[in-house]
Length: 282
Image 1: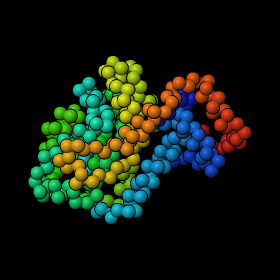
Image 2: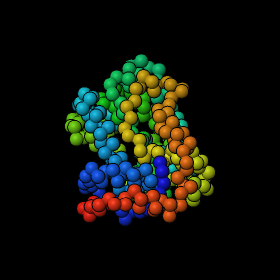
Image 3: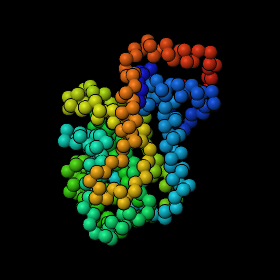
């Protein structure tokens, strides 16, 4: 992600109400490349939601429509003990522990049978200064009672140890397309400031690398999990592609080298001579 402090919370609007034409899309592409935090920038939010919706639409159109689904939800409470799990490796550790020691063939076959999807996102709670990290697993089927019991036991013991929360498992019957889209959609934490190594993050010694990963989580769409590759896998890794993106961005010039005046000049040069459409919200 690249950074700029030009936009604030007063710029926030209802994303679904944004209407732009081709020329304005080009303007947005330039702005997205300059902004500090996509969660505080209307253009970035528009494209992020559009991309997420396209991923969901592709799943809906390409996968058999399930008559029922099973959802497993885990909250990672932001405590000093849980801070290491606010990272890609921390999330992968939780997933590994959840689907480790699956030795019963019936349970393993049940978990591997059918489509499974994974969401990672943030939610706000007035009790916490740091957003709560959410992990959602969506099984396009009704899991067997034995499988649900196995996963519930995992959540009550290992889940609580690693997250500070026991999580929950829910089965939903008679799922329609709109319900499925809602379940798969990624909530966007609009207006959330960028995670920086200041304040509480400096006090509790969050690393720069960890904070970068925390910022990238905002941009992760729903992921399809191949459960055969997840179960009992000690080398589990589902974020390698994003790790490569971060590595590539680290090799480029750090945008923080630019001053506010530099950024304003860049923006003015980009938009010089471009007609202003007063109907746009940005």
